[in-house]
Length: 255
Image 1 (cartoon, helix red, strand yellow):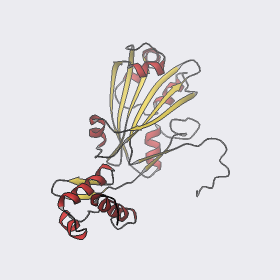
Image 2 (cartoon, rainbow, N blue to C red; image 1 turned 180 degrees about the horizontal axis):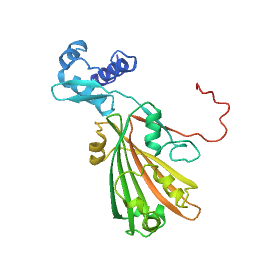
Image 3 (cartoon, rainbow, N blue to C red; image 1 turned 45 degrees about the horizontal axis):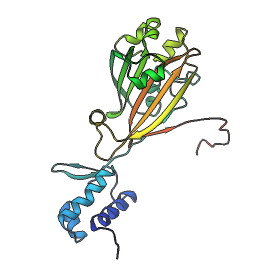
Image 4 (cartoon, rainbow, N blue to C red; image 1 turned 180 degrees about the vertical axis):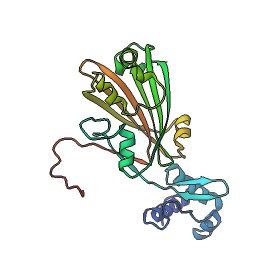
């Protein structure tokens, strides 16, 4: 006899059903009363098992609608090519990557002058509290929130590239815009981390219980100094990131 608590046994069984396709993405799980009969378990035991699956991000719950298996239509981002001008792209990298994947991009913008937070100032090598321009994007793939992106530019750069402080999109992408002005991004340093979302992140990305966010911080450099720091916050259940590094001739296109 299993030593696991009854609610965990129930959760394990449902988890296997989700994994083998018995309960495909978007489908509803049996009702609490049905599960109670099937597993000879009390209503509280059933609810505890379902809550465990919610905390793992496998199912969602809605008042009066029961429990539904999460749909995971994952978008893959090639971080090596993102904003890399040696790869062909039309417009900014986000629009190009999403369109090339056969999906529909949509984003909203906010542009503001703001004091540099300490962690941003350290990356941009400016004084904490000094003026930066923040370009904040709320991005969607199709109609699903995909990410938020906060890019900070140092005040000295905005004097050379005034369009950075203008509201709305820069059609060709900020990296190309800066390059045409003589400030080329010649390298970047990436940091990747994961954690549970803040209440504001959960609201913007429509994240349910049990789903983490992935934080991708990219600091871009010209030949002289840092020129921007971008923090992209992704929904952890709908995104995958990869890099291409070195000679990949031995890697089949079908791999």
